[in-house]
Length: 313
Length: 182
Image 1 (cartoon, chains in turn red, green):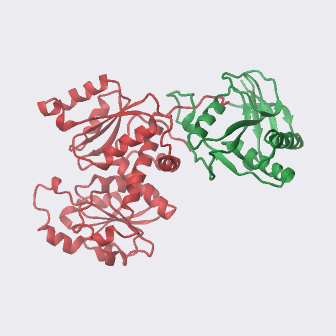
Image 2 (spheres, helix red, strand yellow):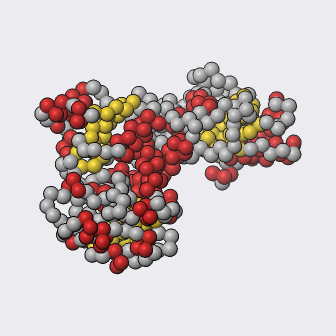
Image 3 (cartoon, chains in turn red, yellow):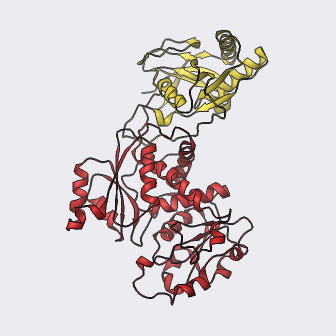
């Protein structure tokens, strides 16, 4: 197994199955480190990581920062809402300013799809996409894949159903790109207005209701209803959405016997997922958060960590 | 790079004799093995640590606990070239605090692996004492590190490579000197 160093991680679309396997394998010893009393290894000593989030985040930004710190990198955050961005500084100028301060990696979230790609082409820093518009969120999909593999032992051939607002979901897209490389049977479930018209071209089956889509599923990934990304009325009301698409323990009963439930967070309890299901031992949302730190440690290490001398000693 | 076998330094019987002697020395140096645990450095230190533990058991009737240490994240040979080495798990299932830990590796050369292993070990507990056992000492130390137990001293040139083969990984037990084929 090997992972050829890549400059950027912008999406799972162009990442190979072997690269994903190395990331997931590397995350296993990283998770051991998080569980130790002494949560620090010197692997990335002297490396600088900066997080720049043009959209709000609790877990992604914090987990990147902790992942960097556990590997002994120096991490800092540009608070976009308190920065010169508010004075009208352009994205290009902001990034150049950051680059001149010397960090090795820029972890970036932006409401516009493709923004990190633009930045990556125009900077010498490595760029990790922490979510761009409705395009991709690669480390979320990697942590979902890690969480599934940890519970199921494998990804190969699993039936994975993704429920909710597929149209606006970068999490769904990255999951589809990643899981399809492992021969998973992918299903998306949601109101037709929230399912992109060409999604079946990605090798995904679409379902209009939970009952048919969840039958025999090994994994149910429930997406958040993203009210901030819906500018038109794509479904009649939250009440109607809850009525038709809120996943409950009764729905879980339709899935495979040992099916698990994922949610990228933050959860809208009582809208896309019932509180009862969110608290169920089959719901791995808390494990996903820990795994997110481990997977991000793996990505940072593989992109920044040292190569080997020819002769060890 | 290709390698050619230049000389056989130890065969299976010679390795066994050397490890048996080290097992006796560990026992003597620590006045018994009640508080001793072995920790092999990945990869080939792991199987050697297990072999040593079995030999100690046959001498003393007590089998010391065995763990395996992955030191990849503690290495100092950083270069941005080439892929980052694959990280494996550290598997030490016992508390090392207060114990006498014998680190086990196949070859000591520059001493940098042993240095990394000391740091890695210290991050998972506070042993009472750490000792170092190696099958081969090939010289050329770059750090002030000296093994406590040595199977065989082998003078080498820096261009040569000493390879320890173990049954569990390589299918046979032997030690050879190799050189790079131009």
